[in-house]
Amino acid sequence: MTDDGLTTRALTDADFDQFRDVAAGAFLTSDPELWEVNRALLEMDRTHGVFEGPELIGGGSILTRDLTLPGGVRQPVAAVTWVATALGHRRRGVLSTVMATQLTGLHEAGAEPIACLGASEGGIYRRFGYGVTTEWADTEVPGKSPFRPEVDLGEDRVRELPRDRAWALIGDLYERTAAETGWMSRTPSQWSLPLLDTPSVRAGGSALHFALHPQGYAIYRVHFGSDARGPRYRLTVIELVATTPVAHAALWRYLLDVDWVAEVRYPKCPVTDPISSLLADGRQAIRRHLDALWLRIVDVDRALAARHYSAPLDVVFEVVDRRCPWNEGRWRLSVDQAGTATVVATAEAADLTIGAAELGAIFLGSTRLSTLAAGGLVREHRAGAIAAASRSFLADPVPYCTVDF
Image (cartoon, rainbow, N blue to C red):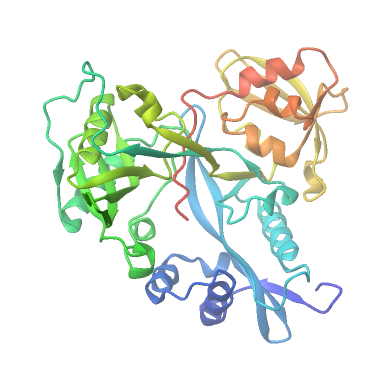
């Protein structure tokens, strides 16, 4: 119980309608089909509510997912979703209560050592120890933009398939990319969210299209428009997955060549997508980086030992984590020649000091520790410690996550 009389408990199926109404109100969305999907997806025993008397005024849920860590390690993670405070009840500590309940519960149960989420606003979650661990490069390319003449498109055709036939193929293609850092598991029911195709999701656009290549696929929709010169459609890529460079180039070529399309936009484009180098004029691809997956280390020792590292390392971290006091203190991270780590609590002098959000940011190997240090977010106490740790934490290729929960 909080000081102002609020109580917190795990929800049950009987609480779903109340939770739906609170979350729908907070996010200003009442799409009934979306909530039918969520009724099947939400794990109500991992969903917590904050109550004022009998009234539910906020809550948040955890989904059970797997995330691929550096080294191809698939690790269960707590995927945090639908964190919401009822309208009229803000600034009462509801969000802080939900965050504390989730993190303490995961730690005490010895459950997932890592939590993650996609943030609706960029200024909320850092104070709860979450750091931006992957990014997207929101990418726009004019339709019909030519490729360099030597780009290999292969001989396989890209063909459009109806939804039911496409679904039988794309799940297998997605699974074939599971070794890539940042990949997140999808059960058949969890596919329903990224493939949601309701009128509110379409936002005036077409139904989803499915373009299939033997080694990849693209899911997209079209928004219609025109000017005095004729049709000027905008094609929006929802997801593009390719298991070979040839398939990747062929799918981009197909999308750029769709008739009447003036622009192709891929909001969740990987930052390492080579579209700029495929184009005859790379400047035609305009890219803007956005935060994607936010990650929170729940238990330092279990989390840091779960991934592989790119270089040997022996460093003592002083971890500052007031939201999860069990993480506070000094931890020695030792990485051998094979990239395998051991993590133990220690009383040795710290080589560097790092906060929980910064530890989450560097965890998947996309954000450089040296970059955070340059911004004053990490302090070095032994010369060379930041450079050595920065090299060891890096992952290649750069992690990518669709963040579909």
